[in-house]
Length: 111
Image (cartoon, rainbow, N blue to C red):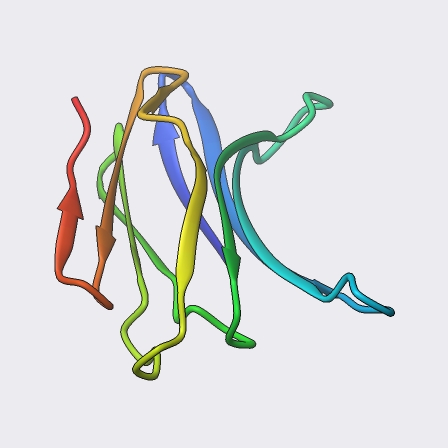
């Protein structure tokens, strides 16, 4: 999933990626969200990391303004399944990042 915004003369893309690893005693699912310049050679910057039990966490991203990315997750999670927020950046490259957990109704608005 890729979304974009224009800020300070360049374009920023937000990218979400879910991955799964498995093997004897090491099953793991994770979703990361990164910001990167749409053009240029800069490496992406990781802004969120989740670990979770379900195959998906129903993550959506919305640019509220060119400098505010809102990320929502957990809408379709079944009772008993857990999503762990392992890492959260609250600001990156003058972009504010807010987070909403729909599985618990918790809003993590960052300033």
